[in-house]
Length: 216
Ligand SMILES: [Cu+2]
Image (tube, rainbow, N blue to C red; front, side, top):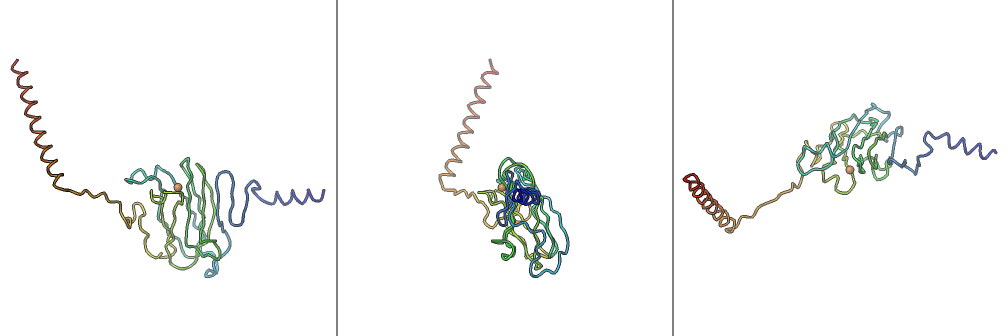
């Protein structure tokens, strides 16, 4: 009886006991949060300077104005003060998996320097991370295969940041742009002249037959 009481106390002490918490990972049937950190301060911060709430949407529809791109976020550039607590609400508007993944955070607090919110389909999740004090530009992306290349990339500047990252839609050009060069040889010119001549002959023949019809 005592054991059951203890067990139920243990279970109900968690707000969501259906979700599993493995180390820095919180998972359920809708998605996953990695390295949620609402209170642990980076070594170089004495206190949380500010709470910054960010709502970010991800999906196909936000990329429709960008040629050759398929997915992106509704906004791709943020700036927060040093030592801010960033509360991210990530909304996935697609029926496929998307992530909000930020890299370069201190490894002693965030394993592999990452903080991630992942949604397996339409839905939303909120989690927090606290940024260090130095001016730096953090890389944000969706790691699902080809999604970064197809437009799902952004940046978060802490303080003044450390410059802009490349290939952010509407902000910076790609490092290696897609090029489709056409190699013109003398065959190109021969084909072009031949096509023009053929077109001229066709027009002459057509006008001849039309004038004959008018004569009748
Ligand atoms: Cu994605």
